[in-house]
Image (cartoon, rainbow over all chains, first blue to last red; front, side, top):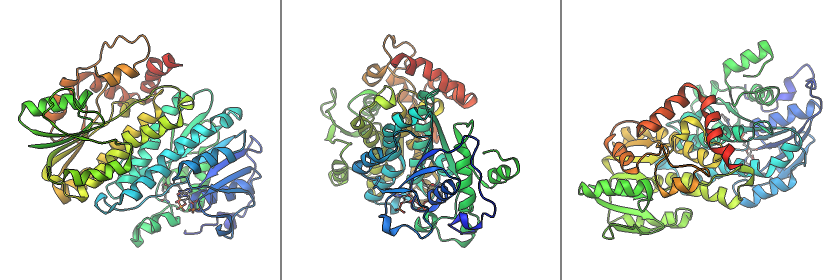
Length: 249
Length: 242
Ligand SMILES: NC(=O)c1ccc[n+]([C@@H]2O[C@H](COP(=O)([O-])OP(=O)(O)OC[C@H]3O[C@@H](n4cnc5c(N)ncnc54)[C@H](OP(=O)(O)O)[C@@H]3O)[C@@H](O)[C@H]2O)c1
């Protein structure tokens, strides 16, 4: 359930989608959902460029053999660097880096609030801006990773705000870019990555109710393929449906 | 009654201030520019785009509070195709519309500057229900405020007896709206800010205040037909901008 290396338990090799080899950009590639996405994409033969905050020497053991760049997306320099290091033509850009804390506003600090809003909301806006040309060239898909908390969550108000901002931004941008770049917002439910524990969630029941990271990563990839709606939620139901029908949420 | 309002010098904020001062409230205004009327009002100059300016506010407010009503009305807009928007504009929109009210709420709470029994009101936009192609960054920031207010509502009531609300006004006859209307727009159908201010001040309980009939109609349309509503906004605004 808590396996963070999804490739180890896939017994059959993943097949290339009918579209063939794709060029992907993934932020938050160094851990959690983003790492699992990169592992699956790399094993399927896609060309992936990953971005994460940590240095390359600190990447986990199972990190796939893909291009990796260190950027701090809480800073404007980091956002500029992302645009500069991105491929010039992209089929898929998945803006997935994010962080958050399970705590009420009275236990927040101004620095943490600014960082969560910067990484989860401002950085994806900056990245979308910087990647427009590459996505246009590839007639690509821009995926914004939100969270089911986007409708509001009493336990994590700042995180919920950042993800709602991403959802609202994506909704309007999808309309602006229609016919040029396909914009989607993907909202995973609680997932068993290190994030929840780092975020301060310790209840064993809550941790057991979490979605397995490899299934969420597969759901995210599926949500980036084919004709897609604006919003895609990744929940137990959606994962089950995907397993049965092969279609995204 | 003691009131703190951001963006009280102009537009909707100024209308709220007019109503409150007529009702005898003591009003403190946080804004970049001083209010045109009511020179007697207590005015705290502050650039909400600067986190350091923001962080300095609670100390300047210590003597004035706690406040019975806090209204986060300061906001800016910029319209145009997203990919052509200068990065500095995107940063500014994010800092003023989204980060500043969230940071200020945290500061006020940490310093006990909102009175028990008081109200904390965020001003978002009817774009929450319809989308706003041509102002995607603005739309995102406003949606963040709606979710933030929704998230705070229960814990603030349970822990502090503070009522948290968010209002989603539609187009108003303010300088802000006139600057960002598409070329050729007559301003017809825009609500009077005084009317909207009154509706917001009167609605003391609702979690989401949709003030005025025009924004109620837009919200209903957006709720029932979200895709068509965004498409209609695209026709009305975005397609006239490009
Ligand atoms: N886990 C969940 O329950 C859950 C549910 C819904 C949505 N999500 C969303 O899914 C996305 C991935 O979450 P996750 O669970 O995989 O989280 P995670 O395991 O904590 O991984 C987060 C990733 O984001 C990167 N990151 C964080 N801050 C950064 C910064 N300042 N600059 C650059 N990169 C930064 C991290 O890089 P380093 O590790 O190198 O620092 C890491 O690669 C996030 O957007 C999250 O909000 C998660």
